[in-house]
Structure formats: C-alpha cells, structure tokens
Image (cartoon, rainbow, N blue to C red):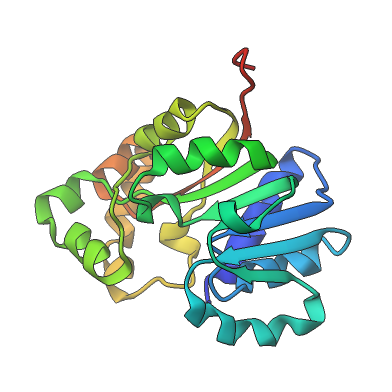
Length: 219
C-alpha cells in the first residue's frame, strides 16, 4: 500500500509522455486499491475499475468509497464484459503460472496497456540466489526478468511496445531499506557508466512499459 502513490505517479508520467487522457482505467490485480485511489486524483474524469482474485483485499476497499472506484473480486475474464482505454498490470506478470496465455487473452480488453515489472534477474542476485528464493517464498514471484526478457515476453504476446523506462526504484521507491542504501554507491556508479549493464549487474530496478495490442496483421 505504501508504494501505491509512487506507482500511480509513474503510470501518470508514462501516459503524460504520450499526451493521453484516458476515460476509463482498469487495474487487474488491484490489491488494496491504492493505485486506483491515487489515479482518481490525477485523472478525475476517468472511470476506474479494479479486479482482484484475493478476497482479503475487499476489507481495504471501504477506505476508497469517495473515489467511486468499481471494485470486483474474482477472475477478470469471467466477470468483465467491457473494453477499457487503459489497462494496468502492476507487479502481476511475475506471479502468473502462464503469463503467455494471460497476456494473449488480455489483448482484447484494452487500447493501451501499462505494465510494471520487477527486474529480479541480475548477476548479483544469481550469484547470491537468496534474493530470488526470498521473492519466491515471501511474495510469490514465479518468473524472473531482465529488461530484455520482460520486453521479449510482451512482444511475443503480440503487443506493440510504445515506450519502456526504468522507474528509478533503487533510489526513489518507498521500500528502500538499509541493505539498499548500503548498495547505493556502487549501484549508482554502475548505473552512471551504463544503465542497462549496471541494472543487469547490480539489480535494484523495475520497468514500466506502455504498449498496445497488435491486430491480426501485426500492427
């Protein structure tokens, strides 16, 4: 929940770069609804919808009654019957048993798609291994990505990538702990020399992607 305003700001910045003001926004895997609540302030003209499979999330939605967000518990594909201007999948792909199947089905429901993906795969994380195992056992990550692997997955599911950018999570995320600060200096140096290589070496980043679904002709 503490990350929600930060994520919403990153989503808004990505959409602003495309000069797009959506009339409807749907988040699949909305959790406690914090991102949508923050977006309701940034896009007051937009209808907001949130879908979540975990019933425990419902107890938090009451805090957002004034926002008039439409929340629903259950499978998005079974419950939803409409098309949205923007669809959000923030920290979702890495939890899915079959992300290929999910992303291919999702294409029919939105015009623009915003993905937020943690980049767990790095040289230091592979050597240590414990960070990968910890993200698997504590937060349920089933898949691990570099920037290249994340973009390849999205493209292989027939999306056209309009923009991708690092979020600066290593230095701006609310969840920075003492271990992150300890690693901050060498990570800063590595990023300054070459951001892509630095991220693959040191980790600590997440990726925000804006995409559109390709049609049958590939466009």
